[in-house]
Length: 378
Ligand SMILES: *Cc1c(COP(=O)(O)O)cnc(C)c1O
Image (cartoon, rainbow, N blue to C red; front, side, top):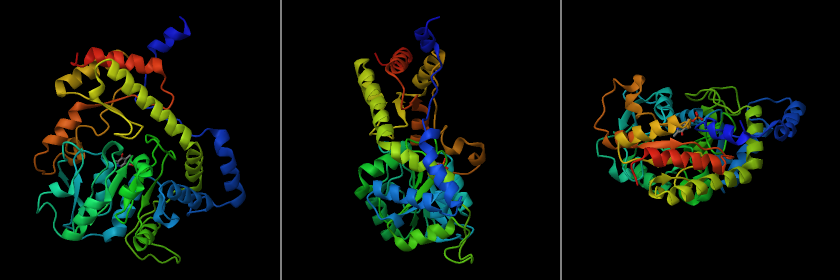
């Protein structure tokens, strides 16, 4: 068998991340060896925060690194409103990764699942029905597939309702760097730097907020309630980023221009080839979503099943990143919720296609061919 034929049959995984290699990490690891500080917001974690802040055009103290996106969410929630009364609810969209609701539970809220808007796939402040939240409740808008959540609407909402708001920015780091004026502000945004995201520290995350007092409370909430004394001052956890993960994050920041350019090339090749095959209108790629996603929007569940069958038959992996919606997870299945027609529709129709910064044209051709065979569009 020739190499080319082998490549043609090779399974294409849904995501093949490419993080900094050992050579790229070495300089940072040597610095850890020399400093002998391994965590507790050491020099690398602080430098990482400053790098992120520079990429977002904000002050370094507006960024608090965290051990994961989920930890960042918990820290932002505890810092925003402390430990809530037992009856307090967190209004969470059903169309998200399960971490959004799990973090709210960790922070002491009972998640209440609500539907998203059909165009944005997100909660929209003007559409939240009056009475959905009562004072003391927390609203958690989510950036679906890295579509960033604007500050202004939620800022107005927070002022007029008095509800707490924490944004789950998930995979929206790229979008924040493109337009920080719109997406960075005093409402805290939790970001994930998990390996599945375009920009990654393997595991990691951060909270971004220009509210200095809140930023300090986030730091306390992520470090046993300590700030400059070993005295616990608030409900809190341990959610810090270690120096080793900060090293990966810093090396990822060094490589970000190249990684981002590679993801852009993949998005453009997808869009170009899908257009040529008559499927262009169905594709959602960067910048409509984060570069780690390439989504094909089917017309209905039947077409999505046919598409997934066709792709699976061609050894191409697909994924429903948000499953069938939060309410379909066993843990949340018994919770009461209102109708969730938009979530149900999106979760069944949006099929994620493979992404890798080095996904080559031959692989994209293979994927487009399998899509053309499986999808109903002609
Ligand atoms: C990735 C993601 C998370 C979880 O982040 P981790 O870093 O994996 O803890 C939460 N919410 C959304 C929307 C995400 O995409």
